[in-house]
Length: 84
Image (cartoon, rainbow, N blue to C red; front, top):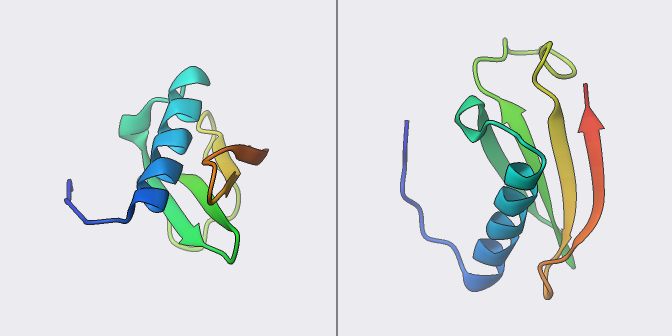
């Protein structure tokens, strides 16, 4: 389902950074949904595989799930982890 939501400029910057990182990593975005959480000075962005059974821990086979820590003010990726 495609849904349009309004976000502030800093969140939009974090979403753009996460999307750019995913594209440069070769992630097929059609297979994922982005989960963005706001923290005090950063955003946590996670790409979660669509169709994952509820309660399933870790990534589905062949679909790595990147998690990013993105600096709120600069939109810079501070840390990246892959769940496989």
